[in-house]
Structures are given as structure tokens and as C-alpha cells.
Image (cartoon, rainbow, N blue to C red):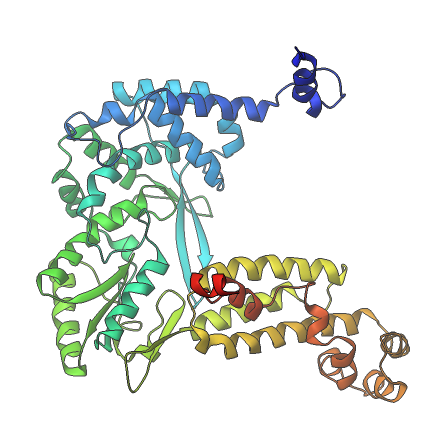
Length: 489
């Protein structure tokens, strides 16, 4: 019989750095292995596991398996450190002690929440959005609470709510909105809540949680999270009276719990709507019906839920004027065809990003620039792949704009006109056309669109070197070939 032992050993040790002895596992892999082992040691509750005693939820939140899974998710999500400066890598290195301490402190009531670090991020449409970044340990506790509460609430959320929910997202929201437009509901009540996350009423939120959670310790823990002191960039500590800080894992679930009341009211009235977080579109058949719905819903939000409607962004609009999750819609005059197009704001943001990624004074190789642009465009298209063929023309124009920016960098990198002339002639451009470009007396942007540059660097030159939005769209939306046609050939 053939012996396989030595061959198996050779295969096992093939990845050894020295080629002979066994490779020692890295500290990172050991730490990750500890969290994985802990997370699997006891299966935590998920949807559909039967009746749960909601008066004893803290024991489930504080279980070492649930805390390990929470810390593992926080580490995978990465994120910036909180006020204490601890990174997710440092927390992962101390995972055993952190899990043991949180398990003990949560059950004994000795858990103390840290402050939340305030960070201001610019909004695409102007202004700033405030994010609250808790410490990594506090994010772990929030994630642990989320893992226990989400299965309780998820079955009771309305199907037309798509934001921050499992197996739902912007694509499912756009698909539902398109269905309503095709059905003839082509007037849109575009509803946006003003500073929603900053204006959530704590007592109303806790009352909604108490409807399904009977464990007062969980409600008290959530209340502590809502009341966590915020540390501003200048070091000022601010007490919080209302709102849920964006930036923690639990915040999206809390926002859905609050807005589920609005969803129920819209459903009770028989309205067709699509909501993603605090952006909501209601679909009606006429302008008059839209104005009536806007007036009554505004009154409900302000008087019943104590929320404010953003008057600048909210209005009754036609589908082509709606900008929802980066998309806009165009309905055919005849038939039920609905085109999904890139919104004007999304197009402006993309062009602004391309300007940042392709500056005229780019100091590295042009290949590096094109690789970075390709990575960004590939990720961008994964979101905007829902665009219909009507958007191809616009995507092609953006592609042409990006190619011109790359050509402008090439022109600038040649520094002198005679160097550009020599380069163009080497690329096969006629001496007359090359001289007309190199010595035209204009800047790099004008030269980038001269016939000599477009001949030296035609669209075909960029194929295989840099991603194209039209090519990416065509690759994702390849026509499906019938099995019968495949067999026929």
C-alpha cells in the first residue's frame, strides 16, 4: 500500500516561511480565531427560533457568544476610534478581557457608557452632517443589543421600509417605486424629515421599544445610550436631550422603530409609499391628491410624532424631478415604461470626485491614476447598475469627460511643447497635427481635446487600461440568452 503520510506533511508545511518547519499563526489570526470560536460556542437567537421571553433579554445580550459575535462585527466594520482613542485592532487584541468584563458588568449593572465623539462631515448638497462615534467597547454593546432586538422588530416593520434592514436596500426601494409608477401612480409626494436623527423624542422611542420588550434593564440600557454625553471637536462636552446619534450600530434600528409608526399611518390610509431611512416617497395619481396627502402627513408628523418636515426638500413632484437614492425616473407618455436614470446630484457628485482623483498636477504615473479611477468606478456602478438603457447616453458623456481629464494629465506631464510634439509623433500622429496641438498656445485642458491628442489616445486606447461606465453597465446588464437558442446553436 502506498504511504501518504510524508506527502500530506509536505502539503501542510508548504506555506511555511522557511519552507521546512511549521509556520506559527500570527497574533491577528489567533485573536480572530478566539472570537470565531466564542461566537459559535452558543448559537444566539435569530428570526424564527420560536417564542422568546422578552423579560429576560439582558442575559441574551450579555452572553459571551453574543458579545463575541458583536465584537467580531465591529472589528469587521472597522471604523474610527472613539473618545478613548482605542482602535478596533487594539480591542481585538484584548478580546478575551473585554468580553469577560462586559459580560460581568452588564449583568451586575456596573456597565458605564463612555462619551461619544462628534465628527462633522460635509453633505453633498451643502451643510454638515454630525456623526457620533462611540468607543469601540460601547459600539460592541450596541451591536450586541442590535443582534437581540432586530429579530424581535424585523417581522413587524412594513414591507415598504427598505433602509438598514436585512435583505433590503436601495435597489429593492427603487424596484418598488418603479412598480408604483408603472401602475399609474405618477405623482410623487417627496417627503424629507428635517434633522430627523437629531430630533427623535426619547420618551416616545422608549415607549415604542417597551411595546415589545418587557425587560426594563434593556430599556434602561438603551436610554443610557441615547443620553451619552457628546464631545465636540473643540473638546466641549454637551448633554443630549433628544435625538439618536448617527454612527453607532444601534441607531438605524432605533430610527426604523420610530418611523414604523409613520409607516403604519400611511398603510392605514391605503397610500402607496417607499421609505428609506428618513426619505419617503408617496405615490398618488394626481397633483390635487398629492397636495392633500402632503398637508395631512405634515400635520401628523408635527403634531403626533413631533418631527419637522424639511420644507426645502419636500414637495409634490413629477417623477423626473424626484431625486431618490441617487436616481430619478422618467415615465413614457404612452404605455407603462419607466426609465431609471442617474439623478442630477449624483452626476454632479461623480464629476466632482473625478476632478479630485484626476488633478492637473498629478505627480505619479498615469497608470496608477487610471487604476484608482477604475476601482472607484467599479464600486460606483455596483450601486447604479439599476439604470435602464436610457441612461447610457449620459454615462457615455461622463466616460468621455474622464478620458479627457486623463489626456490633460498626459499633456501636463510632458512639461514642454517640444516634448509633447515628440511624444505625439511617436504615437503615430502626423507632424502637422502634432505641432498644431503642441504649439496651439492654450493650456493642457484645451490641448487634451485637440485632434492630435484624441488620435494618440482614442477611446480604444483606454479599453483594458481604465474602467468605462458604459462597459461596466453592459457587462452587468448582459441580455439573457434563451436556453432553447443556446441549444439550437
